[in-house]
Amino acid sequence: MLFSTPGADTTEDFANSPSSGPNALPALPNRFAALGLNANLLRAIEATGYTEPTPVQEQAIPVALAGSDVLVSSQTGSGKTAAFMLPALHRLSAGQAAAGTGPRLLILTPTRELALQVTKAAEVYGKFLRRIKTVAILGGMPYPVQNRLLRQGIDVLVATPGRLLDHLQRGRIDFSRLEMLVLDEADRMLDMGFIDDIETIVAATPATRQTLLFSATLDGTVGKLAAKMTRSPKRIEISSAHARHENIEQRLHFADDLSHKNKLLQFLLRDASINQAVVFTATKRDADTLAHSLVASGFAAAALHGDMRQGERNRTLNAVRSGGVKVLVATDVAARGIDVLGISHVINFDLPRQAEDYVHRIGRTGRAGRQGVAISLASGKDIGAIRQIERYTAHPIPVHTIAGLEPRFAGRAPAKKPAGRRPGSPRSTSYSTRNRTAPRRSA
Ligand code: ADP
Ligand code: MG
Image (cartoon, rainbow, N blue to C red):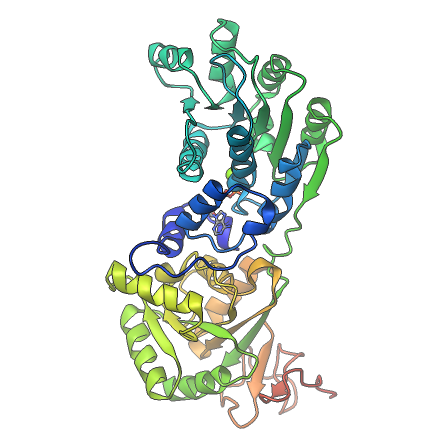
């Protein structure tokens, strides 16, 4: 899914960033506003370019705002940082700070890298809030600097457990005014052997605190730790259905040559069930060429790729968000992270080079739990690539044909069955624009 690849962050940001500036569109109606967050946090969210909360955000934020302890399990990349940072910052900005200089919010993370990401998130989401001082205390940093930081008044403390425990045991941390404790990636912290450190740290915090625990799983030792340190917690388990793309119907069409591919594409794009589509090409040049030819055929199409200037890309993305562009012809990198609910179809005009890119591509549709359709156009030479994708996703892609546009090429395996049967594709269907759910073959 969108959020699942390490290293995708910068491109996510690129794709999601451009909603402010002189040409900014008016704020899109969105479900963030319904979560109960204050206006300054909503402004910050808008500035990031997020249009809708992810499922974990949508479920966890209201529960956390209500003051409950929360245990959350959800996939990597599902947006957990904002799911705790937003309600935590809301709480800090709403309440009165008690006297003292100790942190009001403590976030424990397993690694330095993650701690720095979380610190950055505190700054990004808190940028319109006044007086939120965030400090990161990580292993590997010089003690004198940290000692100085800890003597100042702190609102948010982000820390790795080992180093934090050092400071705690030297009496340098005052948890008396701590309101909220967040354990991010609790499962990883336990894997790394931090259990005793965590228990000691938690024991030093006030029992009145609110505790949020995030983990890929709530089973086993994580569950036990969670039970020990929370009070009547609400459990939120986000099914990984989206990660498995169960809401995205995948189809494969074989094409004999480029002209056949173009005919298939035109036919598919005229499908009445398409709201908006992203069409992927292998190269930037192909994206331009194809977008031009689609415009010439009467489609509201536009290209998006890395050779375009930032301003141009922003305009195109805004036009996609507002619905003015119906067909976006894009390359992998340019389309990463695009999060537009109106995208009902993804079409791979060319197959991606990497199976992983296939997953990123199809994740542009079926956003926020909606249904999506992902169609790949392939030729005989793509059989290997298709197999790789199917192995990677553990999901065979059913072969479809369109009446009148059947390929001469028979499919993924040499025909062993009687003529008329497409080997390896028992669910082959013929359908027209009117009849999308064609009956299965009876033979
Ligand atoms: P997790 O902690 O679940 O692994 P992160 O919080 O690190 O996931 O988020 C993964 C990526 O998703 C980040 O690049 C983040 O900016 C982006 N992201 C988070 N929330 C949203 C949203 N509501 N819409 C679009 N992108 C989002
Ligand atoms: Mg995370």
